[in-house]
Length: 326
Length: 295
Image (cartoon, rainbow over all chains, first blue to last red):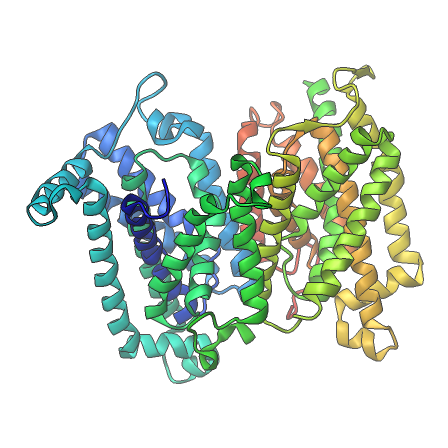
């Protein structure tokens, strides 16, 4: 696939759209409420597994299974949040990343329930290939068929997916942009800046934090479901803690405290993430293609360090509203 | 059943020593920096591969390879301290945590790119077994036991008896108080990183040898176990980490003993440790034996 192929750009668009929704969840939790959730990936995992298990094992229809998947992620948010929101920031970070790892280990080690290391393909036991996205594929086919009236042969499933993902992303971005400007959003920002002061004016800080965590969890769940439908098969390895840090990098790339910078960060990150395949010129061509996946992760790490060190407000960020200085 | 108990106790002591030695370094660093170092696991990985290089490419024996790895990792740790972490001190908890996360990704993936993702093993006979009647140990475990017997008391003595060790504990416990009692806080900070790097290296090589085969995810696998030991012992407390590491190692292995209500399935050992970490953070962040205070 070369860089001028439209299929590549559609792929980037899908990826960026999903990452936008994922990072928006983190934005609500971290940028608005100041909760350093390092286990965001767990919400994706729980939603995807709930949805896939219900569809494959219990023949639940896809919309119901998806709604239950989001509900399961919200449940996890409550279970994680109610005890841990009282923790100091660094302890919360460690506790949430450990919580995310528990989810991944459980998915890995309960093969009779989750398909084990094989992932969703093993949901019906060994020897059978389980699939959960037939309904989704037929929905995409119908959208693509409708699109072909307008764009002709370019109407593919991937194009339909890209349009669907971005419709959801834009809708959610608009919704949360409104929420951020509402009294609710202002209270969250105030909590981020000074918890004691907000308590003193009679707000229930804990309840607001929990709401932010749960909303973020629901957004993470939506991103997880979209990703699961896009990749078709998932396994516990798709929910490594690094995915959470991708979302942090997206927030930092775009600008920590600007909601509309999230899509910019997501597109930049997706280009970086998928663009490493084009880094095949000398001297990088000395690294074989298998290792370039690691080069990509190395770049993610490098960018995290560089941005945090040199430009913590990101490309488009607002230095005045930077909680990282605390 | 008793034989299983003896074997599990031995395995637990070995795992515990690894966690104790690495935990001492991580705890002192946490105490001094006030930031969880998410890259600490990668120091173990780096050390295991540095040792492997000396062992296989340069044909050195395991002792020389271990000492070489300790020197290299100590320099790496102190280099990172001077180039990255110290200039950025005061950036805030979350910013510093994210920086160490980025650092961890960089270190791990450099090892992945240079050494490749395939599993490796040290050049020792993994099939040999010493039968000691009640327990059977591999050569790797024998080395680990030797390290346990020699190094653990040495580290404890160093921290309790020498001026440098006392100063390290003082700075980790209360930086300002240490500074006004005339301790050169910056110099001690560098020493702590040297010590933490060397101990992490020792733990990394031990872990690689005991496990037999390893890949560049070696350190990341144990990072949260190290954190658990640190929190269990009380953050910044060196003795606490020593004791907590050994307790944690024993608890994890012994929980699988069949005499103990049938025993926990071995595959849930990591889940047990992570759950313990979260519960500790929630209810006793000052550690099992620490006094409650503002950390």
